Length: 293
Image 1 (spheres, one colour):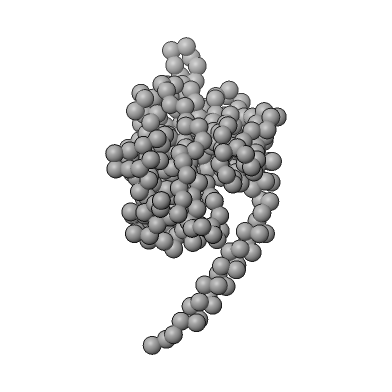
Image 2 (image 1 turned 90 degrees about the vertical axis):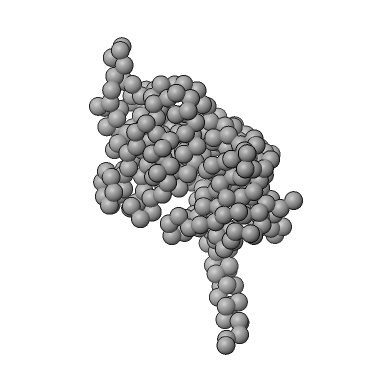
């Protein structure tokens, strides 16, 4: 069985949105879950969070950034092409219930996976305050979707080209310090959910911890089988080893060992660079060998 790409478009340079026909996955998918795909029989398995899903249409939406060999190869595909394997939905879904006021933070590509969570939380009756950030306005995406899924939306850019000039943590800090209070005088923010680069999630956790606000992050470590057997996705949470694929991907941000997470993510950078360089050299060689008219 193969999975047909129905739509494919570039959101911003090197960032792509892909809608795939995957009826069985779409019927079971829930916010916070992911899939593991393999482009062809020779390809590696890579995890990608489900950014959206439509059970009736039988489709899932994935957003990915060109970083290594496989994501570059995936970006070369177009509507009508097929992917060999899409396994999922995997991982535990996000906890969706009426918490009260929830702050959803999406940084960079993390905007994609935070979207279905924010949408579901709003549908469950929560007041959803979303904070999304990017390095600059030209690589910000899904602002319209996030606005629709939120009660309030704040935008930040590192260079100040849109919204707050600074980081998502600046807005979160301000909400915690100067936000509304409930009838008991307690701060009205009941939960924070952050998805993005590990350094961003660690920063959000550092801001919320002094306020005692429950904070959840979604981890995307190196992963192979997605079933808990290989152990590649192990993370340290509260001093205990967990597997992101079966125990997560969401964990208590105040318990995550982000230093270990980031060091493990960097383990295979030389090999990833070598694979990408080989692929680029191969592409150049093929182009040079093509006959000219």
